Amino acid sequence: KHGWGNLPFVYDKVRVAEDGDQAAKCDQFLSIFEHEVGSQFITDTIGSALSQLNLKSTPINTKGYESLLQLTHNTVSDSFDLYYGLFMYNINATQQLDNLEM
Image (cartoon, rainbow, N blue to C red):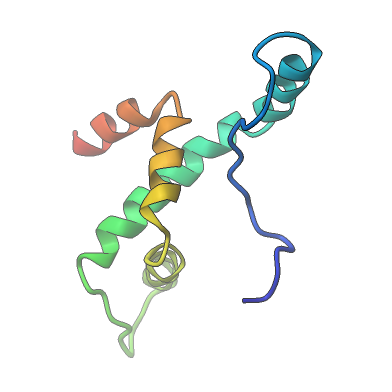
């Protein structure tokens, strides 16, 4: 709605040679973002779960509750493709889900 500025992005290898300089440069570039996928995945997971609770604003919202409402608002319209990508490219996704379940 307001452009791409200050927004995160998801990147997938397309038309990148499997060997050689191109692959090495791509891997180096993507490694910068690997730890970020973990936080995006768990954020999207929690936001999706919260959206199922149909939370509403109240006259006595705490700052924490306001943050939860904002998280829900920010993630409720995310596509399944985005969630799937965050899951597939996060080596810790299964562990994060297991920890959440515990």
